[in-house]
Length: 156
Ligand SMILES: [Zn+2]
Image 1 (cartoon, rainbow, N blue to C red):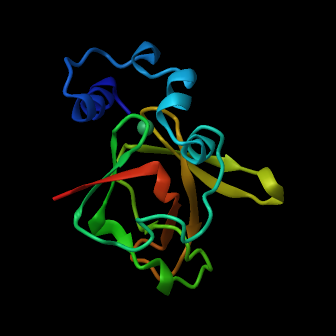
Image 2 (image 1 turned 90 degrees about the vertical axis):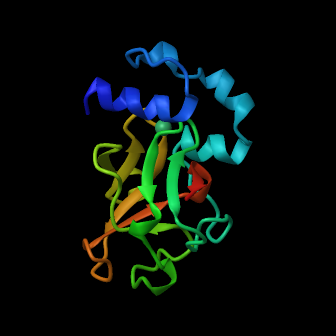
């Protein structure tokens, strides 16, 4: 991801003059602890998982863009949201996407909890979002299982 793309992502959120993105632009963990609800902090910054069916975006409600709750970067579009209740993966309690907006997320192998999974994080701020699984029922064959509380939907 280029600096220019990161810059645009931040600008989208803050409407402030956009400097080259660096760590000093990011809120500190202390600021995030104050700003986020405890359950949001636990998922986004400590790689937790929200309780299934606990939040508003499990089912698609409206067209729009889903943004990172920490930095505001656009991450997913409602066009790529799947009906998780129809997924054969068993991952039915969280929002499901078949893809992310290109360049906005990063993935890495996560072997915690005795499983090997692909973790997905926000490319701009590094916050945890969820995991990616194979899912033949989606058009990309992938199932982005994302915690609702990591996202803010900006409706079209
Ligand atoms: Zn972010």
